[in-house]
Image 1 (cartoon, rainbow, N blue to C red):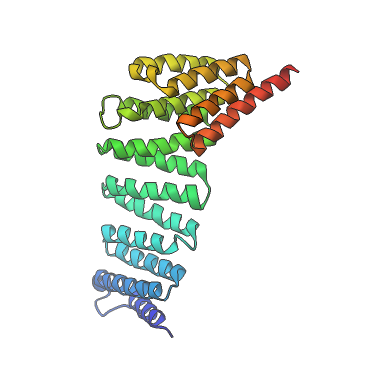
Image 2: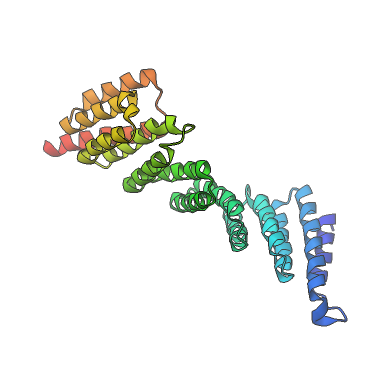
Length: 288
């Protein structure tokens, strides 16, 4: 039997034993068992048996809950999450949710929000569950905003916006881009990013096949920040909106090409712009 297995067996025995004082000794017994499970879990980590390490950390957390040590239990669930993360992302998400719940119940919303973002990233990158990822980023942003951490909240809301657009939930994407833009208007550190938020929101209107909304948005964004009127992003958005309205796919493509020479388009923008271009082609095909 490995050292880790031996430690686990001792912890199991401690967890199920009953001392001479019965109920009154339970709390101390659970505390001791929790410590022994943590020692065993770390031994499994050293043996690179991460799944068993995660399960053992869970046992430790359950002992800590029985002894009313909720803060310690939350931290131990985080260790279980770290153990599961690479080998079993679904189990990692499950125990991370338990930790977040405990942190939030204890009023530790900043920590809860930080791990909520980790949960969102897990859904997004490991489990490819973009709907759950959006909801987790959104809730984390709300908690961060309530804790006066606006920069971190905006970052999480931007993740919601970008994922929503890729999921073709353009209304939600526009709402979040505009929310972050509004939050950034009077902040000298983030105001320079306004053109990016306005541009992405405008692209979402066009991808949603709503030229009228795109034109109205251009006017509103220029009113919110007059300097937007002088940017390449404003000019491109205005020009491609006209090309979409005219059904001119060739001019649309040329406008995108010219812009890309000065400011390289990232993957997200390229994806949304391609959808807009395809929608022009679809309109042409419908007419024919």
